Image 1 (tube, helix red, strand yellow):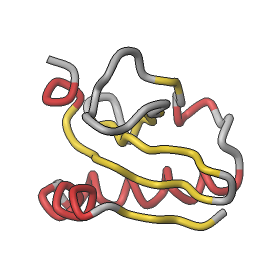
Image 2: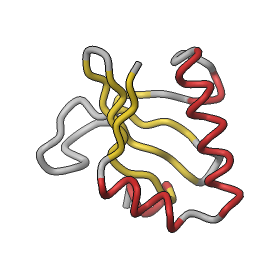
Image 3: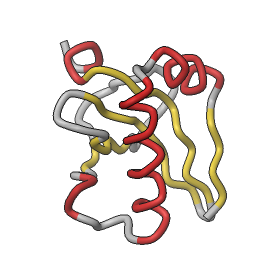
Image 4: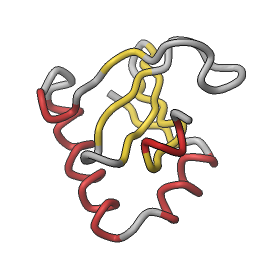
Length: 89
């Protein structure tokens, strides 16, 4: 699978604490090997979480941080990442 990062995702990623960035990198490698791995807690989001995007998936970095992405034919498109409470207020 090809990986695509949006500008918003890159901006969000750079703001994450170093420890969380490393955990995301680990979760990304797991996602590429097994998208159903239990540590990822992948689920489809409900409602219109981000404008102009539909069928968004949420994955877990750790207990407090999440990443949002789309799955296209041969791509994972990473949209946003950050604190769970900021995304789901």
